[in-house]
Each structure stands twice: as structure tokens, then as C-alpha cells.
Image 1 (cartoon, helix red, strand yellow):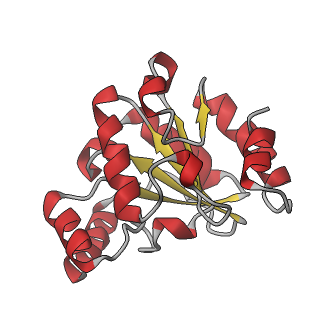
Image 2 (cartoon, helix red, strand yellow; image 1 turned 180 degrees about the vertical axis):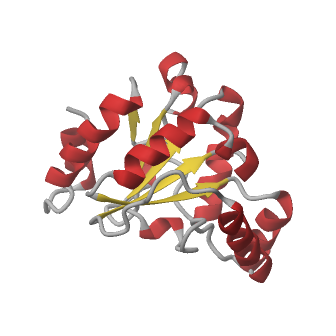
Image 3 (cartoon, helix red, strand yellow; image 1 turned 60 degrees about the horizontal axis):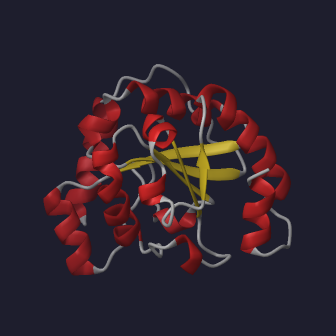
Length: 189
């Protein structure tokens, strides 16, 4: 696991920060690009979603990516879960796993990421303690159906408008003592 942690430290050290991320929010969100780090970080849609989430006072936003093949093999051998880039927290520690989907070809990577994170692949198999898996981005505008069984909620529309609206609603239902199904229904309104 040392190699994975060291790569994460190097990537963070090499980044140029264009804004200050909020680290105080109550809602832990992991924004995930279902491809490797260089591909995700060169995607403008991912960057826009990250800025919105990271600067929202309600959120503590971190990022995750499809691990490099050697990292994925290490995680599988060790049984350790996939973690976030910033704090190396397991993805199951986040309230929300938010996939930014630009290309249908990355749909298969969603399954790999969920499996490495130890999150049940099928949405219907997730329980109240599992993170809510959401997805948005251009690929969801065009064809969300191939991954519908694996995503709890889709945000279909412009992220600049939808993400703050979704966070407002999520903050309202987050701590409600209701079933996962009732929470997802309230969020889908």
C-alpha cells in the first residue's frame, strides 16, 4: 500500500491549486472520475464539478480515480479498499460517491471502482450504511440506461445548476431516520 500512498502524495504535490477547497463541511463527498488520474484531471467537466463541490460550505470533497493496473492488483491481493486521493480514506467512509461520466467507454470502470471500494455493485443490494452512488455528466445526458442498475441517482442536466440544488436537498434528508429507499425517493424529487 506504500506505493499507492506515495503516488497519491506525489500527485497532490505536483498539482497547482486554482482554488481553496473547503475542509469543514458536514457532507463527505468523493468525486470520482472512472478513468486514471491523468485522464480525469484533464477533463474540464470533472474540474468544474470538483470546484463546485470543493467550495460548497456544506461539503468536504475529495477525489478518486480508476487505479493504475499495478495499484488495482495490489488492492485485490491485499483486500484493502480503494481510497480517496487526498486523505486515503476508504470510499465507504463517504456519504456520497459522485461519478463524473463523460464517455460511455468508462461505464465498465464504474464497476471496477465499486468492486475495489467494497461497495455492492447493484444499487438494490446496497444498505443504509453504504454511500449513495450518484452520477452526472455528458454521458448521462445521452445514455444512462447501461449503468442504471449500478447508480442510485442520476443528476441529468447542467452541473452548475444541479449540484447545488442536489446538495441542498441532500442536506435536508441526510440525517433523517428513514430507510435508504425513502431517502433516495426524497432525493429524486
